[in-house]
Length: 466
Image (cartoon, rainbow, N blue to C red; front, side, top):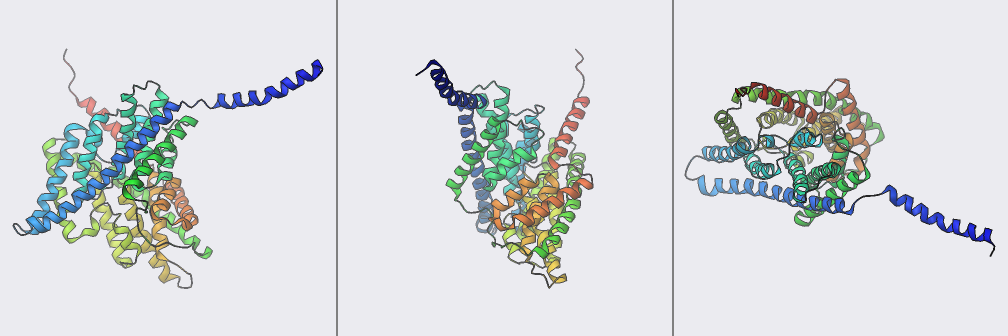
């Protein structure tokens, strides 16, 4: 072999090695980060799943105790009032006494933490949100469990970084985001929605990198595996499975999206307005705050007896709606009533989320819209249930401004994969119209409000004379 051939052969042999080294140099994902994200996901899955079980246990135990033990001693309505007031009191007390940042959804707090402008006191937030949420949701108030699970998941991410003394800021950020994704995946049995929620809705705060994306995916998947291992693999909402709608009906889905876009802007405004009204009512005084919360919980305990459709998160109501249990008039009345009850419960500062109430509202109006369209256009092959599912995604998209997350969330929760096209049309229409009307994403509004109130409180504090 000549010297020239030896040089050529050595160069050829070096090419694959250099290519491999170059590829590896681009991917320096520390295995430790991935392992920690796996741990975060497992813990978020455990906490989120058992939070759901605990809330269900409190709700069922409350009902059974009310009927079997107390109902014969005192009037049923009074017993319902007392039990729900006590449960709500626990939630409000824990929040006001130990962790004010655990009030409400908690998602804006995680977004603020990802931006570095809000603290994460995980040692307070996790127990307060867990047990406070059990009380508030168990009392029958119109709240969802997804906000608490996202906040607890994010807090678990920060807990893991503190326990393992992680100093790298990007790693701490990635694990915080991973916990939030795992929390949502465990709340709704929706791993794709959990991933996309962080990537899409939290995009102003999320630091995009290969490491962070992989950490979020690992956490969401592991949290969802834990959820399915404990609760089974069935969809969260049991409802009919629909085929793709006729192409001639797609314009109706765009119209529905436009209506939800306008309503989404109004809904977000009502949320912040209700919160401001409650602050004026209790003035952040503990006694007034607790009395107000206990009275709200007690009233919802009574409504749980006589008007159960306007209480609770609303996930259990969705199958009844989509199975044709109500007329269009009743659905619209329930829609208005649940708007009011949602504002009362969420605006009061109770530890609970707003995802589930929004999904119920979207289902109510969407199914009513489908029934009306069916009567107006009998020549079209219209199935009202399709509009109910599209409405779920549309209201989420209009308020949260995360259409892809809303689409994935609804599909994963209902297993209606054939409705992907109408969901895209409705959700996109909702976002476009919401932007035209000048609305802002709900969680951004809530975070801005929190920061504004924090500054006002600091101004009102007496200055140190020394």
